[in-house]
Amino acid sequence: MNYMNTSVNNIYTETYYNTSSIQLASTNFTYNNISDGNINAINLIKSYASLPNNWDSYNAISPSNQAIQKAISFILWLSEYNIEVFFVAPSPNGEILVEIKEGDSNLEFEFSSDSNDSICAAHNGDFMAEDTLNETTQISYLKWLICPDGNCPPNL
Image (cartoon, rainbow, N blue to C red; front, side, top):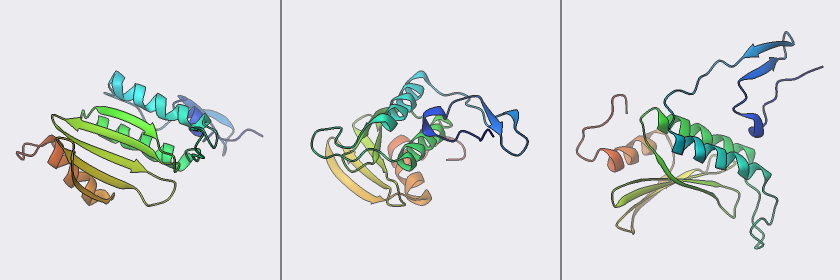
């Protein structure tokens, strides 16, 4: 019996097997307007799925599939607003870091295997604020970064 492949390694496969009918079915989502830079960031994050424990030789934990999936979903969401990812990296605690930058300011989003995701803001290299990541803080911090004058993209 064939099952739908939901592993992180195959997230961009354009077709999956539908387990209810065991017929080939296309995905119900598309990836429009994603920059090459954001696609590269997504592919790099996908590659973190193969990191073993102790990948940094200092007892780092392998990134969780949940953290990887949340980081990729976040980049896809950023792409809807033409926001470019500046930097991605695994953390020693199994989280995934996604950084975006605008001028001298940046935001770091840290995605974990549970609901303890966080956001950190800096300006000119100086710490500004840190919060638990949720829908409200995500939008507020993005507005601080990309449209401090209030001239934000529609629906942000």
